[in-house]
Length: 128
Length: 375
Image (cartoon, rainbow over all chains, first blue to last red; front, side):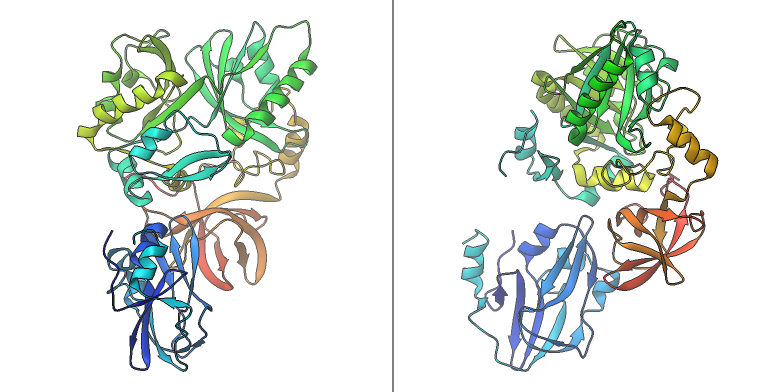
């Protein structure tokens, strides 16, 4: 499996967040896309909606099942990856780059007690 | 996974990197490479499935044909040796106890292939039916599920290599498996054991189901994998089996079928012979005469939507008219598809319906089965 990027923070529910000043880009990990298998539909939150860390905010559907995605951060959704509408397989092909889900303008400091770094995430999924 | 049963092919699945799930108490491969890739392999080349979890029940004896006529919806006595038919077992209310395949192996020997989750129920029902049928007549019901295993090998390329599996001709009628016509079965010799080869399947592709002693099934699987390799054969899991059968509109017990659904409502009237007595017939005749108030029909999503799933409500003009029994994203059609139990007068091919998915309505159209037709 591909490497786990060092610059990201990870939720135990397999989402990643890329922090850049007061914004965070959110997606699901490569491990998550592998476990979910062929992704055929991604339902994203609306731009302008507010999310609380841990909130159920998106749905990823594979051929077999629908899975809830939880926001790793608190803030307002300022952009969503509209490319996923026509090409949900981007999540399978490029979970950390082209397969990103949405961007959030943070309204509170990320709760670092719930987010873990790359080595801790690797250990969690048994690749440490 | 605790207390799950494993088929003799479990090691083969593991070495192929299969992901396994609990399927009716069995630890079965849901996929190897991926559901979509396996689905496409079956549609365009060939796929091999482990179906050893399914039940095999032998019904024999001088009165076995007549007994099956009186127990099942279809007319088993109309089969000649080497013939097969789809059939159903009903309760007194016409609800479905199981759907199954009946193979006539010899004049007085029938092989029933039944759903894994229904083996015990089917056996107990058949034993009760034997009691009712009469002690003075000869019928034996024997559960062979533990001694027999099975694989399904499906797809357009299967007939290019299936014959290489056997060196001798069939014991009933045909020279080689590729000579079997649809719904025909014969007995071939493999590693000095008799194996049944039938031209049947659950995918809509041409192909075969092979039933043999559990002790040789792993060797048979490995031989087929080798023979099929040059022809694009891939191992395929229950995930692909499900998407393939949904594109064809084939029912799955527990989804389209159950004890409170009749074969007529499920759209299986073709396999119900109301001109002979069997348990549930009176209720089914009455239903047919009075008209059905709900039917299971296939549908296709009209635009981009999440895949429909079992249990989602179906509506039209704001009123609920039924619910989804099976649904998925069709790998062949690239849209959401499914089947739904829809009440009259909304149960018409061509009707526009809406599927409620997480509180939102998505348009769909009721379509004739099969949803996928090979071009």
